[in-house]
Structure formats: structure tokens, C-alpha cells
Image (cartoon, rainbow over all chains, first blue to last red; front, side):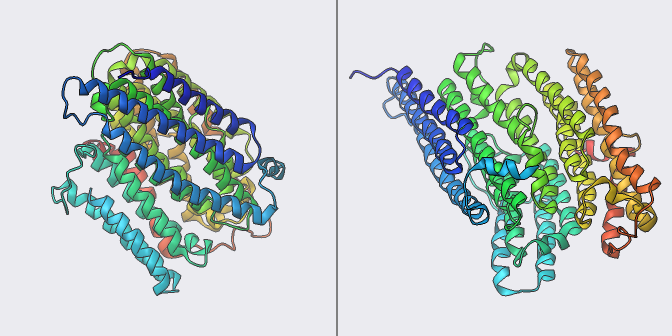
Length: 114
Length: 458
């Protein structure tokens, strides 16, 4: 079976992650920033599953009953759960902000400070 | 592991207590009882009595060092409840929610104290962070509080993303989430491990507000309700530092030489930025936010040195810093105005409370005979024992000298300035508040004369 090299996955994941970081640093809409953070977390999920498969295949050659590599796939579920909890709190905070200033632009807050 | 169970159960209990009683006072009493319960549950486990036994596959492991750290944290939590309970009651119609969130944070701290796997580190940090986003924004109609919550949330989630990427790279390199597994093997750094390490370092620096990732701290600490700033700046920060040192000792202990330079730069930047900016602040609350960055600089020195003395000294530092800051923040929360001038004539109106604040400020500045002196002393000696970068302790001492200036400005206002029209005289301090303040002062002086009381336990 031809296996896709791990590098491709790393490139994909780092590209997604970088898009997320650039989005967080440049965009000014709180919801878009939030989406970019989710993109970063999902880039990590892709990478973890890819590494998990890689370690599993490496160990599989030596031992057909190996469980190596399963823990990263479990980790992905934890990330999903935590991300969901973060969404709950984060969207609540953004809604609270919207009620007060009728905008989700984070520049607005900086203007208030001075 | 007792303390995880007890704090989670108490958090749930407090959530429902809001339905059962509308009496805010009794909810505060319940929270204090909870803090005592968590403290004693942890002490019982330290003495060998565990309530339950779960096979965590070695992902959680507690040694005496973690237990003593937890004792310090829970004792600070108790002091915090006793001193700031009335302020927590005032923040909302249902203070039980806020107390419940604080207990959930405490359970996260208990996980942090014993993690042996990156999974537990991630879960612990998130269990600490998510309730804090809510607490930061608990003053819902106040725009500054909204801003603090949003900023804290976006920055916190962003740094979590960095940490997860770091964890993924470390996993790719070593094929395991266990700290021992990552630490094992060649002393040479592979590219994956280097990237992972730097990403995790950046995210931990975010969490402990070390420069150059400190920029969110002043806004968040300043904007949050003062009573929750107190919690974030002391107990939570100590927990983040504990995670930091445990992670770097466990996962990167063998390659210390390769990341030490990076940490030395972070330390120097944190010390300089924190101390210099604090000098120019007019608001005491904002000054304390920058001072917490400056104190973080000293604590990062302990992580830089990473020897036995640094590890022990860090727990002493947590105790000294938390007790002193909790006491000052408790007084600050009672004052409606947070500028330095608000403290004018404070000593004349409230001599006892002013004396305690004086001791706390001296401890933060690191004056001998206070716990803060020995805390700083241990950090400096730990770096000297490390044998490299002798310029770092020198810089730290210079920065500590600078810090004396801004702490003494408050002392000067309290003792040597006259108040206008009795603004501070109107504040009432209950007798129980004064008793707890005196206990704080005694703790600081006690640890300042006999640091071995704490150090011998470690």
C-alpha cells in the first residue's frame, strides 16, 4: 500500500495554522478572529491524526496487535470538546459585547480606553 | 486527587445553592467551608488517606512537592474567600455562580499539580482558563469588563492554539504524550521537537504573562472586577507557573542548555518591561498589574535555573506573592477610586489595615524580614548556582530596586499625605476583615523570618 508521506500532512496543517494566526493578527471582527482560532485548533487535529497514523504504521510492522498511536486520536476528541466549551463561553462574551456597543469590532474597544 | 473531586463537587453544590437560598451571606459561608474542605482533603491525601483510587495510566502523579504546592494554593484560596467574600457577593445577584466557577478553576489547578502527560496539561490549563473568561466579564454592563473578557478570551484561546500545535509536534517527534517519553532519547534536538518546544514556550509565556507576550495583562487585570483580578493575578498565575516548571523540567529537562538562552531573554524583557512601565502608572490597580508582570520576571528566573533551590524557592514565591497581593487587592476592592491619591491619609483613618498593607507592599518590594525577600533571594541564588549568565541576577536586583519606587509611592500616600474631605475615612472595615489581614501580615513576617517552615516540607 502506498502511504502518503507525513511531510504533506505537516505542510497542510502548518498552512492552515498559519492562515489562522494571520487571521487572528490582522482581522478586526471578533467573530472572524474567533473562526480563525477554530481553524488553528482544527489544523492541530489534522496533524495529530496524521502523526497518530504514522506512529501506528511504524509500530504495526513489528507488532500486528499494537495500540501505538491511538492516544493522539483520543486527544483529538478532547480538543473538540474543549473547543466546544470555548465556543460557548466565547460567543456569550461576544453577544454581551454586542448588547452594549452594537458592534463586534475590536477596534471600538481600543477607542474607548483613552 | 482528593482535591479534584472535592472542588468539583463543591462547585456543583454551590451552583445549586443559588436556587436554594437567596441569602448571599450564607453562600459565602458555604464557599469558605468548601475552601476548608478542599484544603483538608488535600492535606489528608498528603498524609496518605486517599478517598478514591483511579488508574490514570500514570497521567496524573502527585509527589510531596505537588501536595505542598496545592496546600499553598488552597490556603491562599481560603484567605481570598475570607478577605474578598463581601466583594464577590456584590458582583452579582447570584454570587453562587461565581463561587462555583472559582471552585472549577481550583479543580483545574489540582490537575495541573500532578500532570505527567500533555493531555492532562492541556485539560488542566483549559479548565482553569474557561471559567476565568466568564469571571473577567462578570460586570456585564461595564464596557471595561467586557473588553477585558473579550481580550482575555481571544488571547487565551489563541495561546491554547499555539500550545496544541506544540503538543502535536512533540507527539510527532516522540510518539507519546508522556513527559518522560518526550524527555527520553538523544540530547540532540530534532526539528520537530524544537518547533514544538518553542510553540509551547510561547503559549506558557502567554499564560504567565511574561514579556513579549504580556500585552494583554494590564488591560485584562485593569478591566476585570477588582475581586477577580485578585484571583487571576495570584492563585491562577501561581498555577500557571507550576505548570510551566513542571512541563519544562519533565519534558525538556535534559536539553536545558538549548532553551536557557531563550528563557534568559524572556526573563530580562519581563523584568525590564514590567518594572519600568509600572513606574508610570497612576492607578494602583494598573500598577499592580504591571507589578505582577515584574514579579513574573522573577519567577521565570526560577524556571531558567531549574535546580532544586529554584523549585523550592518558587513555591515560597507563590506563597509570599499570593498572600501579599490578595491582601492589597482586598483593600483596593473596598476603595471605589483606584488612583494612588485614593490612599491619601489612609494610615490616619485606618492605622491597622494600613500597617498590614505596608507589610504586604514591603514584601512585594523584597525588603528583608518579609517573605518576599527570601523568595527573591532563593531565585537569585538558584540562578547563581546554575553557573551561567551572571548578568541576569544583577539585572534582577536593579529591577527590584526600581520596584521599590512604585511600591513606596503607595506607602507615601498612605502615611505622609493628607486626605481631602475624609474620603478614606468613610470606608468601613469589619473586625473579621481586620483579623484576617493581621493573619496575612503574620504569615508574611513568619515566612520572612523562618522560610524553612515551608522549605523543609518540600
